[in-house]
Image (cartoon, rainbow, N blue to C red; front, top):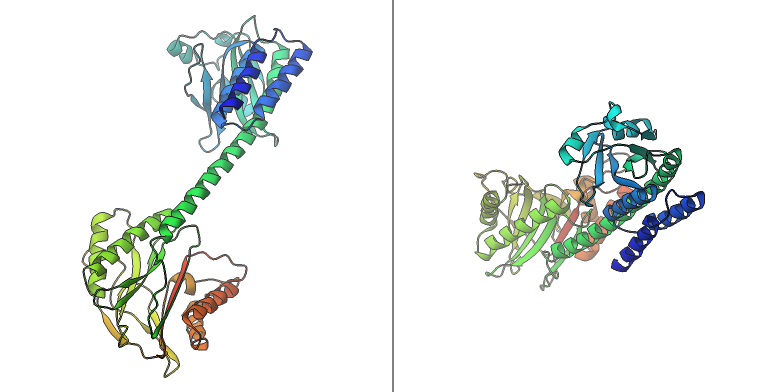
Amino acid sequence: GQPNRLILRKRIERIESSIRPPSAIQELNAMRTISEVMTSNIDLDDLLNLILNKLVATINAERGTLYLVDEQANELWSRVLMDQEGHLSEIRMRIGEGIAGHVAASGEVVNIPDVYADPRFNQDFDRTSGFRTRTMLAAPMFNPQQKIIGVVQLLNKQDGPFSWRDERLLAAMSSQAAISIENARLYQQEMQQRLINQELKTAYSIQASFLPASIPQHEGWDFAAVWQPIRNVAGDFYDFYQIDDGRLAVIIADVSGKGIPAALFMALSVTMLRFGMSLGLSPEEVTQRANELLLAEQRSRMFATTFIGYIDLENGGVDVASGGHNPSLLYRAAAQTCEYITAPGVAIGVFKAAEYGCLAEHMEPGDILVLYTDGITEVINTDEDEFGEDRLEHLIIEHAALPAQEITERVLDAVKTFAGEQALFDDATLVVVKRTLV
């Protein structure tokens, strides 16, 4: 916070006002004060700026540059460049190039009393900035694992060339600075992760608000649903939608991809499907309209598989349409067997000219309709066996006498037991619709 920064700056002022050249005791005091400052939990950029100010002031240089190693680019990157006016800018150079690049590659402290006599010195910087570099002292920054994470470069000792004592002091302070930078990076990563986690929790809450607030309650019917994102947000969704003619729409869908992009596409898809149902369209017309709207509105090349069933709660009729989704499982109580139902159609958001068909089914008392995503059936165990539709079918037959909610629980328990120590890799959604005896 602001009070901490004021304290830090007062400590810096104490360092800047110290007598130069420093005695051994003054060096130790400076190191102690610098250590206190650099081990504070502050923003990384602020810390780098403070470190450079302290190094310049303690060793009595005119200006300095602090480079950090960019391992991916194999470059040095000046996070802080301090000129006579205190302005900040940025420099990038390949590791091994120039004096700072040589220090990063070799791990050596370099003390140059006349930089213009050193062929490694790039005079273009002086010509561009108008600054006149005379002497230079550069030291590597080793982290506790003895890995070079940066280079500190000081220019123009105020009272002559840099001394061996300056070399020793800069090397020591650079090592302490490296530890502080590593700590600040870890602290920054932790703060960023906390922010991400909070944002994901918010995203989860928003996405969950697209799901039904409650499970429908209708005499003669028993409904249950479970939605389990593999991450904080998911590409799966389900819905119950009351149609104006009295029928109840049951929907399940699975968006390609995972995480935030899939969640956003899920929100768009469910909005399109609900819009079509609000117009009184048939299941296949709803799917057709959603496909057209998605292709007109989105440019992400994502798609979703869908399954829609319109259930007549009075007589048990079910009209279904599929947008390339897994066939739904229909348990027949009279025969105590399962069959799979689907209808012609491909995933929505893929082909503009896609056509969708409708299939009419009927549910008798005791029959069970099971909608699921591949996060249920495609779970892999440690032997690399797949859970599969057959296991799901056997579970439904075995537990058909149970209420819908207990059936979902038995299925999920079986899936988790089957996976064992193998991590689940996909979102899992399951909807169970059971026609009961009145």
